[in-house]
Length: 289
Image (cartoon, rainbow, N blue to C red):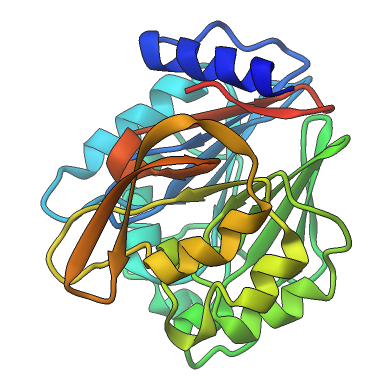
């Protein structure tokens, strides 16, 4: 198994373009949008896709992220899920919708907190199921507290046969605790809560131990005032991560010092590696870029 991952890692480093997606495979993109978040899933055995949040780094045109999404979508239809009303998770949506109308938009939190028009959007509910071709998504928890946007974060679990992806948005400790009750097996790929922040008990040791993620993505970037992921958060997940060939990884000690290392764990930071892509055949999940 380690040899397979090593080969795919080398291929991903030497080839920027990806092979055409096998129709039986699921493909997940974590786009490099700085200290924002933008995730796209191409659904297996279908011409559908799910966009989970899409914001853009400050100071960059929103069309940059929108064009990335549209390029990878191709001719697929897509559904938008907005995890909560923080602008770094939805600032690109209005630009994207003007270029390509989605089949549906679902949102967490209060719709009046979104500083953009969400025409026809529907509120998410706990336990709600959303199909993604042959994969199945479910909302583990949402709107724990409506008076604080991060506490309203939707935690979304996507399962394709034996592989599981977990997207907890900006979940606080309160939200993680609720979601944890509905997770009964290890997670193949985790998108770290709140970009890898530790405030408000996000990414706790108890959470890391419970989900035992095999791979983790931190959506982050260098921008004044943002210091994620925290090194102490990375250390909480590392005991459970798969071994990988050495690659760049950076994290913050507190709010002042950035630490850059060569990691041999399956921890990936968009600020170090750019756009990240993972693929599943339903049996195993592999990093392909």
